[in-house]
Image (cartoon, rainbow, N blue to C red; front, side, top):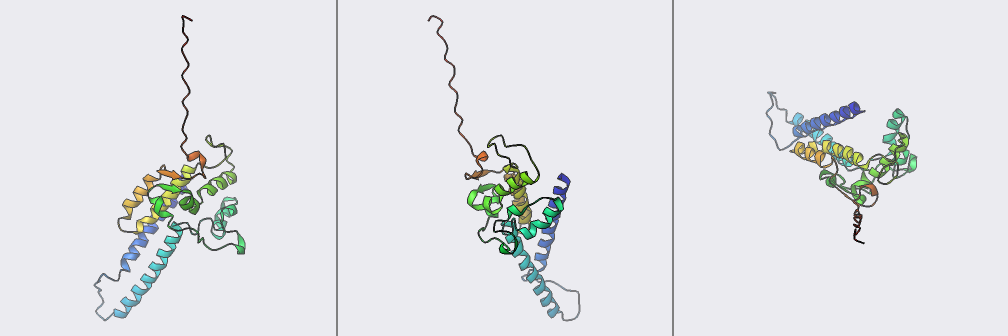
Length: 221
C-alpha cells in the first residue's frame, strides 16, 4: 500500500511538472527565435493557439479537481471500486446513476484553507467528503477497531486530511514558486493545523476536569 501511495504521488508530481512546462511554451508574451528560414508566422500562431487552448482546458480541470468538484462521483470511483472489490457508491453526494450529476456545484475554493492546514465543516470538510470517506472506507475495508475518543468505527480523520493535503500540494506546483507552497501545505496538514466544526467530535479539544486531591486526615482527630 505504501509503495502504491508513493508511486501515485510521484506520478502526480511529474504530471504537474510537465503541465507547467507546457504552460511555459504557450506563453504568448515571450518572443521565441525559430531556426526555420521561411516565414512560419502561421505555424507559430496555430501552435500557440492549440497549446493555449489545451492549457486553459487543463487549468479548468485542475481547478475543478483540486477543489473537490468531482469528489465521490460514481462514474469516477466505479472502476477503482471494481478493481479493489469494494462499494464506494455511498460517497456520491448527488446520487448515483443517470439521476446523479456530473460534478458538484455546491463547493468552491476548498483548496484555499487546505493550503494553510485549516479545516472547516461547511467548507473543505464537506468538499473533500472527509467524514463520509472515513466511515465508508472503514466499513468496506472491514476495520473492526473503534475510535478511542468517540467510540465510532472510522478511519482516523487526521490521516484523511493529511492525504488530501498532499494531493492538493501536488496540484499547487503548476503555479510559480509552487514547490514552496506545496511543501508548506504538506507540512501544515501533517497533522492538520486547525479543525473548526462539530461533525468530527473526536478532533475537538475537551476541557479535562482535574480531580480533587485527597484531603489529608488530621492525625490528632
